[in-house]
Amino acid sequence: MSRVDCAVGVSMGHELGLTTLQMAEFVARGVLAFEGVVPEALNARFLEQLRAPAGDAERTLSQAYSRLIHNPSIPKISPGTSLPDCFQSGNCLHDIFALPVVKGMIRSLVGDAPIFDHHFLHLTLGAGTEMQRTSKAVSQHNHQDSTIDPRQAFDIQLFYFPQAVTRAMGGTRYIPGSHLRRVSEAAIARYQNIVGQEHVVCPAGSLYVFHMGLWHGAGRNQSTEDRYLYKIRLGPNAPQVRLWNDSDLVTQPDSPRPIFWTDPNHKDPVANQLMALEPWFEADTGRLELINRLKLWRYITGDPKADVDYWLTRVENEWGLP
Picture: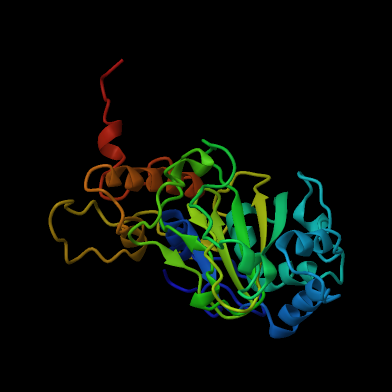
C-alpha cells in the first residue's frame, strides 16, 4: 500500500482534501495510510494523559482499563453526535481532528460534519506484565467490525497510533481489498493468515483510515512496551458524492481497453488503481471485487455510467427487454 505524502493531495498548512487517485486507492483497497502526520508534541501529550498516574499496582489488562475508562481525555460521547461537537477545545483529540491534513481526509470521505458512531482506546500490554506471564497472549482473530452492513454508503474507521509501532509490537493486521466482501463479523475468524495481508509498522503520529468493511485484527505484542491505539468510527450525514478535491477527476475516461490483452496506450492511473488485483483474489470470484469497486466508484462520483474495462456495462445491456 502506498503511504500518503502530506505534500501530495493534502497539506499540513492548508486543507485540500484527497486527490482522485487517493480516492480510487481507497475504493480499491479500503485503506489509506497517513504516516507521521500528527506532531510529536501532540503524541507525547496524548500518551502522557493516558499514562498518568502510572499505577505501579497495575498488572493486568482489566486493571489498566478500569483506570482508562474514567480518563477524561477519552470522553463519553453519545452515538449520533456530530464530530465537531464531540471534543472540547484543548482536548488532544480535538487538536488532532483540527489538523488540516486530518480535516481534509475526513471531509473527502464522510463530509464536513460526520456522525460519531463510537470510539475506543485499545491497549495491548507488553511482555513482562503479570497478564503476559500468566496467560497466553495471542493475536486477535480476523473480523469485520459490527454486523453485516449492505449499504452503498460507508463509514470510516480512523486508527491513530500515538507511538512508533515496530513489527515486534504486533500492529493491526489487515487484508487490503477485503472491504467489499461482506461477512458476519467473526465468521472469518477461522482464516488465520491470508496472502497479501499487511501489518501496521509506522512512526509515531500515524493515522490509518479504513473502510468500515475492511477485514482486520490486532497482532500479538511481543515487545516490552505497551501498545496504544485510538479508534473512532464516523459515518456520513449526506451523500458521499465528490466530497474530495475532484479538480483532477476525468469524466471522460480512456475507451475500454481489451480485457484479456495488453493495451500499452492505456495510461489512466485512476482506472489502473481501480483494476489493481490483490494477491488473495481468486481467478473467478475475484472479478466480483472489481465489479463492487466500480459500483462504489459510481456512488462517490455521482456518475451512474462510470465504468472501467466494460465490467458493469456488459451486465447492463438489456436493450429491448421488458
